[in-house]
Each structure stands twice: as C-alpha cells, then as structure tokens.
Image (cartoon, rainbow, N blue to C red; front, side, top):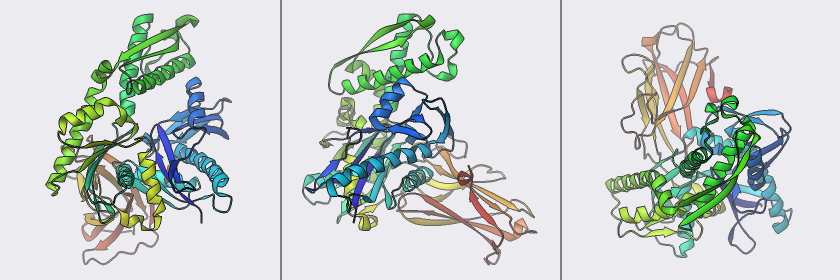
Length: 525
C-alpha cells in the first residue's frame, strides 16, 4: 500500500502535501522549497527543470520555458519555446502540465522512499485541486495530464471545497456549519458557500471569475514600473512584444525580454513586500538603447498599491456579495465563517474590504493560506474510496449547445443548468439540418450566467466553447424531417463532461450507428 498526496496545482505556485510518519500533514519540499513555482525551463527538448530552478533560469532566458500554463490548459494553442541549446519546442499548456507533474511525481516519490522505504514510499492515490469555475475541458486536461504523468489513481476536487475540508479539520472539533471560502489565487478567483452536513461537504452555491487572479494585480504594478522606466530614460518600451521593434526601440529582442522579465519579477516582489510593509523598494538592471544599461530603483507605498489594484479587489467583493445573496435565496440564513485561501488573500486590502462590506462576519486566516488547499486535498486523498460521499459539488456554469441554423442561429441552447448537483445527466432533442446529411458537427458550450447574465450567443463574452463532437458517415438517404438527434450531456462528479448522441426516427426507434465514427475536435488537434 502506497501513500496518498494532495496537489494544489496553482497558476503561479504548486504545493504538494502528504501525511508524514507522525500522522501530521506536511508540505513536501521540491528543489528546497515547499512552494513550487509552476514553471518549466528547457535546456534542450529532452532536459528540463521545474520549480525554483526553472524560475531563476527563465528570468535570465525568457524564451526557454513557460510559466502560468494553467490559465490556458484547456486550449489547443501551441507555445513556441526556444530551448537553451537553440532547438525549438512546440507544446500545448496541457503538455506543459504533464511534464511539470511528471517531475513532481519523480521528485516526491524519491523523498517518500527515503522516509517510508521502497515498499511503501510510492504514490498510490492523489487528489488534485482545480478552480471551481474551471470548464469541463480544463478539468479533463488536468486529469489527463496527471494520469499521463504517472499518477494512476487521481480524483479532482474544487479548490474552495479542499480549503473548507482543511479548515474544518484544523478546528479540532466535528461541528456542522455553513462557511464561505474566498479563494484568491494567482490566476483565478473562486468563492463557494459550503455546508458541512453529517461529515459531507456540500456546495450550496459558487461564484468567481477564472480570469481574475493575483497575476492581474502584478500586471498593474508592472505597468506602473514600465511607465516609470520610460519616463526616466526617455524610452518608449512597449508592454507587449507584439508592439516591440528592434530598429525602433534600439535594443535587441533578447534584451527587451530580459527587461520585461525583470519588471515582472520586481512587480511580484513589490506586491509581496507590501503585504507586510507600508513601503517597498526594489532595484533591477535595465537594458537601454545603443548597448547601454543602468540600475533602476522603484518604490511604492501600500496606499499607492491599493489605488492600483482596488478595482480588482472590489470585483472579488462584489462577486462574494452576489454569491451570499444566491445562498440566501437557497435557504441559507447565516454563514458561520468566511475562510480566506490562496496566496493573493494575503494582501491586507482583501481582508479590509471584506470587513467593510460584511460587517459582524468572522473572517478567518488559516495558519498558511498558501498551503491550505493542498492540505485539504491530502485529507480527501486519505479518504479516497469514500471521497464521492464526502464532497457534493454542483455545476458552476450552464452547459449546452448553440443553434446550427434558423432565426436563432448561434443562440445558446441550455441542457444542464447552473447549481445542479453532480453527477447529473440531461437530454435534449434536435433535428438534422438537411436531407441526405452525412456529417453532424455539434459544438457545445458553457455559459457563465452569473457573471454575464446578458450573454445569449456563442460569440458573446461569457459563452465559451468547450469542444466539438464530430459524427461522420451518417446513414445515407436520411430525411431531416424524419430524424431526431438526441443529445445527452453527463456532467461527472469532478465536473468533466461527457456527450453522447443517438439518432432516432419519429417513433423513438434508434437508427443503427453501424459505420458511423465519433470524434472530438480536441482529440484530433
């Protein structure tokens, strides 16, 4: 029997926890750190580093690796990486996640063997946390990356639920209550109202924004640093490489990338420093036109930081208030505690803004918000066999397809609503577009109705395509008026989505699927 681990696969940092010989939950150290930067750096296509070493190397050679891959893990877009040896590597974010987790598994098992011996020092079960608002495609990508990296028994858990599990475990008493988890990470923001009921953690309602995280705060600081650099040195360095031109800006592309890397690194340090201090000061080297360079000093006060990032913090508070109101509509009279999780929750303005908006409400910091989620995942991994009974998740978005033609072309057609208990199965019937149709392509979508209530069409903000199911070799001579297309959505317990299609005649008799082929576009990319 091996060991179970909990993995908080974060946008900026990853934490892996386990139960040590003394029965205590501890974060495992990788590359001398419990907080593992979610970064890869390539010496060559066959040799790469992750974690702190990768982060340091990437700062010096920004094109030789990838960071923040979690934010695009559901995409098929390929990232071009120029390894240190000059070879080009093309990989998707999900490929980066697999490579990252593969190194994690190797490194962690090495340490487990040292502590427990070869007979039991291997990973037997793992629970990986994902943002509550991740799409089914993103969740599937995480799970697939984990299994291909060597984790055979893997389950997913929502980050707020894992935080709730860890918090309840830390209290040392088994009491049923309703808590709200405010999870502000590097790439996403989640908020969930969770009721502990007879030992099970039941999601009542969720909210959040998977595009709102601490990286946006860092970006605002970086913009201010870049403006200060340009003002001092009379340069016009752009914020994005798309706008950069070697001849116009009179520095090499390599120096430009180093400049932007240093600015981003400094912005992160400033943000972290101002969580503890009222003032922050950092120095860094800047490459200037015509081969020159200089040292740049940047200072920022906490008040200036709060003016920069206030709009984003206010946005999280608005979503939190809306989620609380939704919980009230579902019968919740009182929330017992508000538990803060995620590294960005350390920012003093977060607690200050929540206290001002939620008067007379207990707001709880855990002993370490950065490891809270991985500890909860470890607890769930320790009860792997009964995890399906311990957590009772719900859908966070609506799921459906869009109309293929007619007056409602591209209009979202609901199949599974939001806040639906998981797992669930829903069906809807459609019709062929034309006679003698031999190919059927079904695009399916998720609609974030909570953040974008006005979104109605596939091209609207808040409506995101999950994938396409392509069915080829439909039987010949089918008449559109005589064939029903029954689409079945099954949302699994971990939020991943399965889709199936049956063709029926008007008497509800199944039409033979012999010779038909079914494929997802994402599997073909």
